Image (cartoon, rainbow, N blue to C red; front, side, top):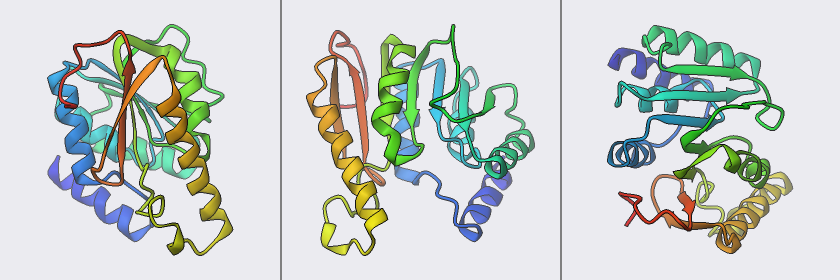
Length: 203
């Protein structure tokens, strides 16, 4: 298992594939254990790294993860099989906004897909969340550029940063969810329904 993970880390670095930071996945795995999460929906599989890191820590965890890029989808399938976790992880090849997950409910939804669609992801998939569940979003610092806009050198990056800022405001103003923000990894948020007072590990 550890060799499989090291291979993925080398592949990600060599091929410029973004993978979750160690501090962030440690936070998420702690959340999963403390809240006895059984089912996870991940938006943005990439090469399967974060799904594998979650599944290996909790043997009864079931993960559905969605990826729209063909090359990354195939790489994720290979990695999941190599790590012998295909009985826990189901990879859906589709654009998340087009995916039909009728009948599914999740204890945790992890948003780590296209930054420009974060609000759309949240709006769509919040209906797939169990009442005692939470939505965790990654990359809200966007490599420090959200707080340091003077470092931005392109209009495309400026556009993405603006979308992330809009998403952060959307979370703050959402009356159905309480959101807490964490300066961990590349910036994380945890959003849970206002009626859920028993959530653990985010204080």
